[in-house]
Image (cartoon, rainbow, N blue to C red; front, side, top):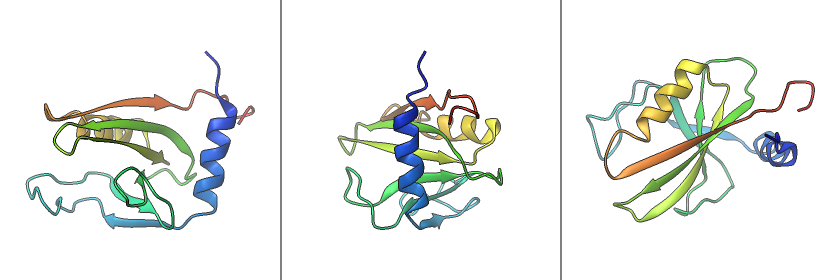
Length: 122
């Protein structure tokens, strides 16, 4: 499998040049679905755009390196849209939490693409 170094470098550049805004901190409830609680900090990159008209979504974990280590491509059947979510500095446990978050209902499904490049390559 190739590491798609250029893809990850482009994401790194985008994140490095953007402000990360956490608008749903860990432990907070979803604004429309109060029983859904965020177990990992969730937000967006300011001054970027995604399919829903907002900023590119990010999950920010507890690792200090703040490295993009995965993306999740999500399909939402109720909203009839798709989006990409960037995972930044997430531990393996946090990645699993995010994966379950996006696959916890019959209406939303996600696939995780992990960064496979060796540290020396990327």
